Image (cartoon, rainbow, N blue to C red; front, side, top):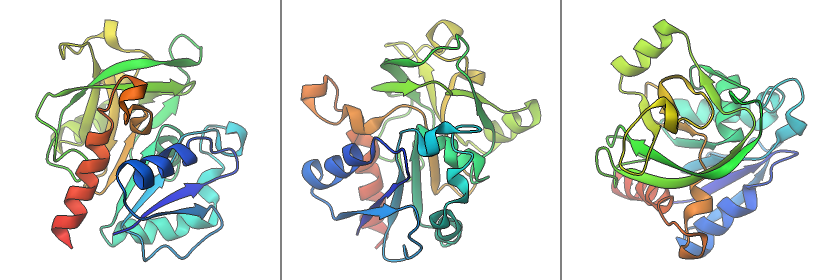
Length: 232
């Protein structure tokens, strides 16, 4: 199995993701420049956090037109895995691979801190090693992390069990008080209907070592590995 980490102009978490996969989880991984189009020999593509193209127009709005994204559409159709973290989530939304949109944080400020998220769906390639309602401590770092979708779209997400993570407190309580950016229904991560594309605002790669005060992010990466290895 092999991971690919896409590098857009302005990506700044690509090396963090690469480090976790290679040095902590000891799995094959390669960088993929955004102009690459040959990705068929990979099993999971990571769209990392950062500020692709300087967030001009909107976060992810220009990156969605990068050549690699055309290949990622086909990659997803084949049932392979894609995970978009922070800016990667924004790119997936702009590309139409996930439903909804990102708007400015409710307080109109950049937020960088640890938060708690509750696992809402464990029946995914990205959470199969988690327990239902398990609380993960993972940091966020974003200016446009306020997830929005209209009422009809929200009901569709709920109906299809596409909401994977919600912001909560340490005990797992989901409420507006524990919503750092104003995201609708406290949503911090969703999947597509097919279940092979995940977008989340928190950074699991930044909570994968004890030195960083949490290793909860490893559960997401280990779930991906577990799913791929059991499928192959």
